[in-house]
Length: 327
Ligand code: F6P
Image (cartoon, protein in one colour):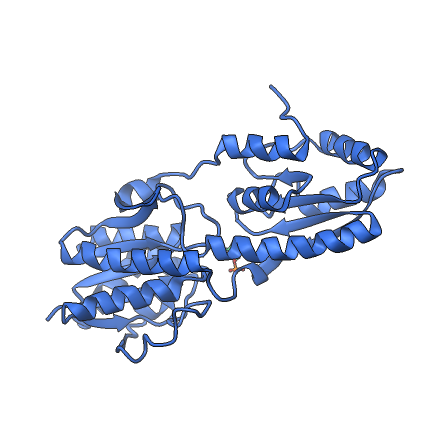
């Protein structure tokens, strides 16, 4: 038989369990053995493995987080760490590895692939900043969680006639903020990808106030050049306009039961990763392009960058009644 290992790494993302389950059960169909690595690369460096059984895969699909545990382990990006990881895999007799995680974790997967470990990556991060794949596991759930929170905030904003600045996660990527702003019908969005002009935003805010709008919702990406807190303070310092409140949604966006979309995506990508190992095509990441699953070289993924969809940004501005500043 063949023995493979599965690990989740970096920030957890709802739907990771679906990917673990699908990879594991797809391996079982081939009579392969699967070892789970607890706590991501940290567990790997410490040589910790635990055998996954059909029983351990039961009842996990609807659960948020990752049953394997995860960690942010920079050691694997060093040569010494990679040697240690390789030795641990050899000692355990592992012949293939599935790495489920975001950009940093996939760089680690590439490093191990280069050392000769047949490795396949599965994109999972709520930030949606992994290039090539349209979506990563966890994005849809985080988006829906943030959206529900913003809808609630809108109720109280309208009741008090206030501005609310809501900060969402995403690291240096504005995807989550932009999608939230569009779906929530926010009046403004602050993104890392676009240099914000506070004076334009304050102008829009003042004119909304004069026109009698009941609220002004601003969705701010945590990586925005104009931080949420700063803009909130500008608003409160301005006269004759909305009073502002600030909400930082934080880790609430990372938890919770995965949406149907993330359960399906996790299941499809987990199984696809195992198939890629079985077909002898490691060194790739499985991802989704439109409705199709595709394989992308880990080398390209590690070197690439995900770009914001400018049409979607334009749409968000148009629907918010703002126009894009030219030049
Ligand atoms: O990468 C996922 C993410 O939730 C980012 O959006 C955020 O910046 C970061 O992780 C927070 O990391 P931690 O949970 O280590 O504080």
